[in-house]
Image 1 (tube, one colour):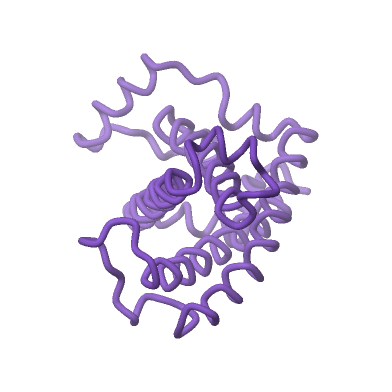
Image 2: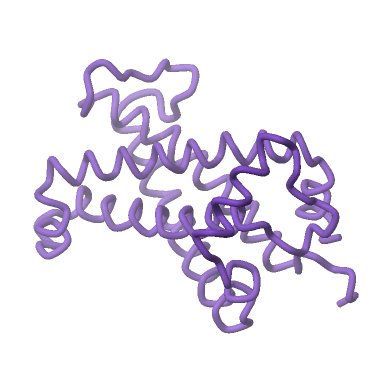
Length: 197
């Protein structure tokens, strides 16, 4: 592996699989949601849903769920074992986050070295990792509420688990939208996630 490699092959593979899985999970989840909305004022048009009907959406959701869980768990294990998660996300301080948040709107964040994340990126990646764990745990609670009574209790019951799941999904969608904007502003970052450098 060249010393100029920013993202090794395994990171890039897990990134793209994770991105595809999250998109498919959201689209099929929105179709499931349409059958029994948590918030009646929030509805999703058929053009952005997957599955065509409740049964089809559930089949997609459960199939992709295994891909997301396996991919995410393997990524976390490799990230910890190789030390990559520690090197890329930590250390992180509230002061550094606030400084970089203030610098971002003025275009003062440095993107010269794409192998080094700024504090806002570190915080965002840490939040999305925790959020995916919450999506998975709340999803398990909704899927098997009887088999996971402790999770159900921690989520405040089945109905609250649905709200937690929806909120966690919304955070993922928000992250994805901001991520796309940032890639558009720094297109070289997309190339590093495709070619590794």
